[in-house]
Amino acid sequence: MTASTPALTARLPVDVVNALVAIVGRDHVLTDPSVTISYSRDWSGRYGGTVFGVVRPGSTQEVVEVIKTCVAHQIPVLPQGGNTGLVGGSVPGHDDPPMLIVSTRRLNRLDAVDQLTGQVTVGSGVTLGDLHAHVNASGWNYGVDLASRESCTVGGNIGTNAGGIRVCCYGMTRKQVVGIEVVLPDGSVMSHLTGLIKDNTGYNFPSLFTGSEGTLGVITAARLALVRPPRASAVALIGVANAQHALSIVSSAAPSGSRLLAAEIIDAPMLKLIADTASLPMPLSAPSPHLLLLETESEAPGEISMTLPGEVEAVVATDAQAKARFWKYRELAGESVGHLGITHRFDVSVPRHRWDEFSHAVRDAVMPLPDVAYYFSFGHLADGNLHLEVVGPAADDDRVDDTVLHLVADFGGSISAEHGVGRQKPKYLHLSRSAAEIAAMRVLKNAFDPHGLFNPGALLPAE
Ligand SMILES: Cc1cc2nc3c(=O)[nH]c(=O)nc-3n(C[C@H](O)[C@H](O)[C@H](O)COP(=O)(O)OP(=O)(O)OC[C@H]3O[C@@H](n4cnc5c(N)ncnc54)[C@H](O)[C@@H]3O)c2cc1C
Image (cartoon, rainbow, N blue to C red; front, side):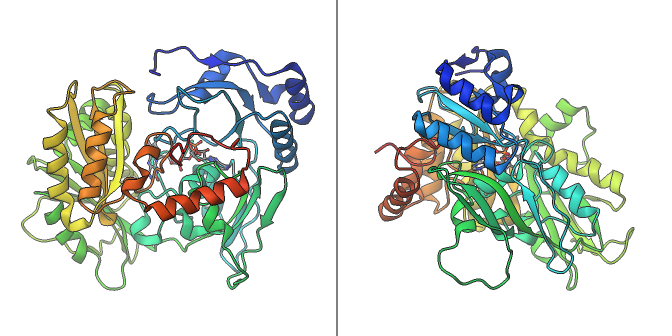
C-alpha cells in the first residue's frame, strides 16, 4: 500500500459497534474512513491495511470491556499509541485480516512523581513529550528520548523497547520500566505497579511486555524509573572522517566526573539533505565525510567539560537555544528522507568497530539494485546502531530488505536495534534469533493469545 492508496475500512457487525459505543461512548468509536485513515497507515507511508475502525477507551476497565467484546466476536485487535513506529507494527499489513485499532491515547494518567524512589506511574497513552514535561517540573528526567517525542506514547515506547538518543547514558526503555499494567487477551488485568526495588518473585513481566509489539495484550499503565538531570551540558558538532574516527573522539570526550549524554553520527549526503530540506546553513565551514554530534555533561551552565582533539573542526553550544539548533541536524533526518518518497528504513546494530566496513558494504550492495535512487546513513554511534535509509523501490519490493538484513547477519549484528520487528522483519527473524528462541516466543504467544487475535502478522513469522 502506498501513500496515495485510499483508506480501506471493513464493516463491523452492528451489534459489535453498539457494544463498543456502550463501553466508550459514541465519540470514541471511529468508523469514518476519512478519520480512520491516519490510524490505518504508518508514519513512513510504507505500511497500511484494512481496519474495522478505531476504538478509544478512556480507562483500564473500558479496555477490559473492549477486549472481551472483541474476543467474543473473534475480532483481531491492534493496540496503537502514537503510530510513529517505523516497521509496520502499528498498522495492519496489506494482506492481513481487518483489525480494530485500540487507540490508547486517552489513557493519559500522570501520577505525582514519587520523590523518595524517583519513580512515576503513568498511563500508556501519555506522550513521551508530556512525560518529560511532567517529571522535569518535579526535578527529574526520564532517561528515554526520541525525535518523535511529541507523538509517540509510553505504551508504544514499551511495546517497541524504544532506544533513542540517551541510550549511551541511561539504557533502553526496558531498563526504565519497573512495573506494568496490562489487559491480557482473556480480558483479565495484570497490574504490578508497586515499583519495589527488590522483588524477586518469579518471571519478570515488565521485561516480557517490553518489546512485545502489541502481540500479548494492551499495556494500560507503567511504573517508570527516573534519572537525575545532568548539572548542565554542552553540545558539539564535529567534522570527522568516518565512524572509527568518531568513536575514537567519543571514547575520550567525557572527562572523569562528566557523563557522555549522546553521540550521534550523520553521513555527508544525509547532512546536505537535512540542511536543504529545512533551510539550515551547513554547520561547519569545511565539508567532511561525517558529522559527529556529541553531548556531554558539564559542571555548570555555560561551561564545557569535553575533550576534543586539536585537529578537528568543531562548534560547541552551551545555551538551550543553540543546543536545540544543533540537535535539529540530527532530529530532522528521518523526516527529510521521507520527502524523497517511499523509504526502506533499517534500524540495525553491528559491532561498533565494524560500522564503516558494514556501511560501505551495504551501500555497494544496495545502490546497483533496481530503482534505488538514494542511500543515506546516520545513527546512534555510541550504541553501534545505524539507521540506513534507501529511497526508490516500491513499498512491497523486498530486494533491498533482503540484501541489507542478510548483510547485518553476516556482520554479526541485530536486524532490529530499536524499532522492533513489526511487519517488516518477521521473515528475517531467524537472522537474529535461534530456532529455539523463536519456538519459545511462539509458546508464549499461544499461551497469552490462544486465538491469535492480538496484532496478527506482527513480530512472529507465519508458521
Ligand atoms: C521522527 C522519528 C524518530 C524516531 N526515533 C526513534 C529513536 O530514536 N529510537 C526508537 O527506538 N524509535 C524511534 N522512532 C520510532 C518510534 O517513535 C518508536 O518505535 C516509538 O516507541 C513508537 O511509539 P508509538 O506510541 O508511536 O507506538 P505505535 O507506533 O503506535 O506502536 C508501535 C508498536 O507498539 C505497540 N503498542 C503501542 N502501544 C501499545 C500498548 N499500549 N500496549 C501494547 N502494545 C502497544 C503497537 O501494537 C506496535 O506494535 C522514531 C520515529 C519517528 C517518526
